[in-house]
Length: 448
Image 1 (spheres, rainbow, N blue to C red):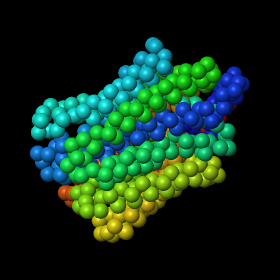
Image 2: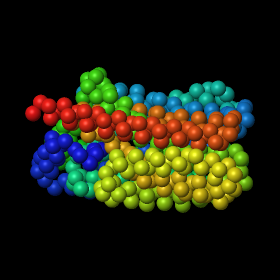
Image 3: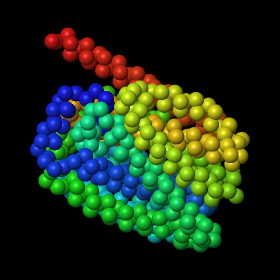
């Protein structure tokens, strides 16, 4: 995705793409983006919720529920560690064999890793082999997610009208609340319909089967779009082709780092209002677990509306200005949120999640690719994938583990401090990006 001030080269390439593509419309690109991101987030939340409701009791029953949840969150983080590796590997496949081959292999790896998890026996049956298998399959999911990058988000940004880029930037992001709503609703149905014993024995496996089916559907839908003649023309005319990884790192390493730290506030908040509070409730107030899941589903709906609302706001005041203001708002929320979650009862917990999701939607809706205009167009396809991987790794990969560990061992106020650090990182990254842009403009002016 791109920011408010895209280089003239990008605009020229977009005009050329629209001229060459004929009857390809932004709606076609948007469909590919939404399908891809919604399926990815659904898979993520199916696994993340299982880390709270299932794995501590079936995979890690030999420790306390708190330690079991921490172990499960550590396995969750393995997916984020494997994601950059998958990007490097699948980028070479893309360069040699094409985007269709990359996407097919990546999504089949995702589907196979996911369905394999659903067949895992309990720890009592296979011992440490089950833990090793879970870690292996989670790494497979992470690597596949890195490989499933198809460039449609960048394509959407480059072809969107300059005065509506904020609105189009929200489309990839709505997959997050949609994925959470679907995954949480499915788990809620199973929890209510089955006894605790049946849920832990076989009920939890059904969401993973559903994930596999969705991945198959998403594969064919995305292939149909991205491999059409019109889409290939758009990719080519926008120079969205995989570049050599080492060349991209050498030329864009500063921008990749800045881009990775820019969305830290929203990505840290992402887990602090989805996975972490669910684990907190499960460990401390499990008697109203079902009610809290309903609250999260409702709050995610508000988050979805907030994501959509961030588009017009960003088009009016600027994406980076909105991100800066939301980082400040998230910092304030980080200070007061422990009081809501830790001492507010069910009302406080509901306010924590509702306010958090609204802030998350306004921030997350514009967080992806806010600094993409700083990369050369020829490197953007690969640089965007690398930046996304690192952003999720730094901002979200260890967030549930760190937040739960701090809250259980030192008090929930330190979990708020962790979120505060993400907001500070976003402010610093945005400031650094603005300063580098000003220096670049001054340098360009001196050569005219």
